Length: 329
Figure 1 (spheres, rainbow, N blue to C red):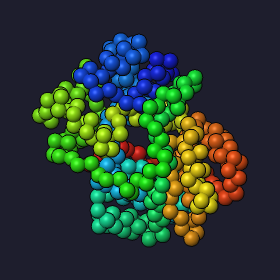
Figure 2: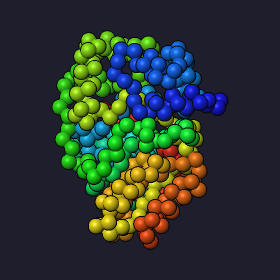
Figure 3: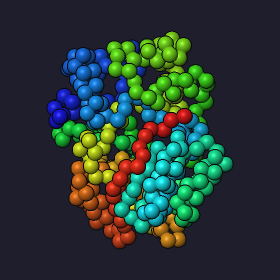
């Protein structure tokens, strides 16, 4: 079923975040000049039709004391899917993609300790037949803001209030202090928020908190950087963004800070990082570019390449989504 203009407005608004009020769906409905019943019916339908992956909390692993990293390796075809199955069974793996590249398997892994990380990676390497495992930790973050603009006439920069996290080194972030009750709240919000008139009241009842305490704790998690937002996470392909390209390039170290900020300014870019290089993999600036097709992704990348006079670059298109989920504890 096609999306109408109100569906698209609603999806854009819910990517920004749901307010912390007793009746959040009603607040959204009033803002968009809709009825609450209409909002809930539209959300239920769009979830059923696959446009919405989930509506819930989006958390920052570093803010909760976890460390995440991007990894890639070249896996022989006969071992590819058995390796993917091993990788995907770990809760700390949120993304795993086949990409059109010499390094054909790319995944993220989040863990609390180096010992845990090392044991998991060794198991993965064994399943893959022992290939070289490339580690690409973030050295500088220029942008981390996933927003799929569902309205052609909407200005994404104007309707997304959260700023680009320019120049933030994620490894430096201090974890937020959390209590047992916070963990219970986080686990409730890792799933789907109830499509009922008072979803936060339901969560309060499940955790044994008052509604006021729920709001105070969630506000504290947001202020401490552990909770990014409570909102909708869309399925890229179903939402019309079927092309997903990892743009990588080589820049002189001294040019990266300013070039990274300029790359992050493109609305089609959701993630932009400076990452570690390797002797046979010299790329140091990475960005995820989204578009309706590969041509549109290439257009953005080539515009940036011309602007910065970049000679060495590539676009690694995702050809298969092996796993994609939200971070959970």
